[in-house]
Image (cartoon, rainbow, N blue to C red; front, top):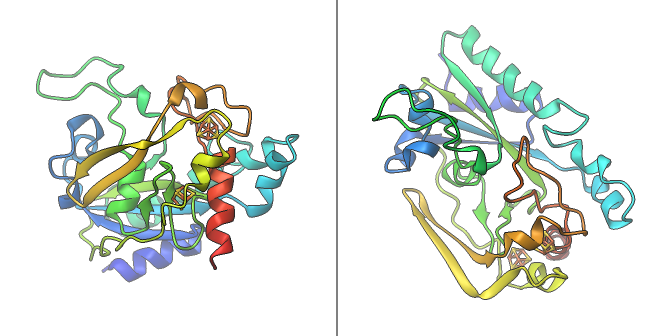
Length: 256
Ligand code: SF4
Ligand code: SF4
């Protein structure tokens, strides 16, 4: 019988850098268009995996010449590593008799684009909030700069998730304290896109996610190293490689 320890070992052996487990109860009251149970109604656990963005890969962006090195950790990039590892974890769990659904981070503006199958169901595609899934799985916290932070890599990772009908011992929610409100992310932004006087809060079952208001329209054209989300229509790009994300990275590394 698989338990939480053995599932985590499978994920790490397959190639994930981080793994945490959230019980489905931490998604109660989450809206239907981002709720795992609308994708797989018998979901009991959400296994969330983190994949580091190579530290050296940020160098190409710092030099302003090679964005491609960064995209390697992203499903849109030249590497299929993250989807492959996620798929292989699913295969291992299904070999043991459990059902799984692999999910990668998609642009949230792709929600509600399809036609609902019935009036009581959300429109496809239902897309889970991957940052909240990582929070619910105890992997870290959302920083003021709207960058998800982990103790291991700061803002320097991407996440995938596996929905499964396997009941697993959940991880405790992360206690917080990684973001020290230093403001380095906001100060590094040439467009003043982070409004430090305006805190946006969203309450979830596993805790409140807070961040400074982000003027996304600036990020869409930011020349400092943003990267489109997978299949994005352009709402909010991946900012880890941009000046804000790199400043946070340097700040947190300096504290170690
Ligand atoms: S992506 Fe660019 S514009 Fe947006 S917060 Fe980061 S540095 Fe500023
Ligand atoms: S740079 Fe500082 S304020 Fe911004 S997210 Fe990182 S730790 Fe928080």
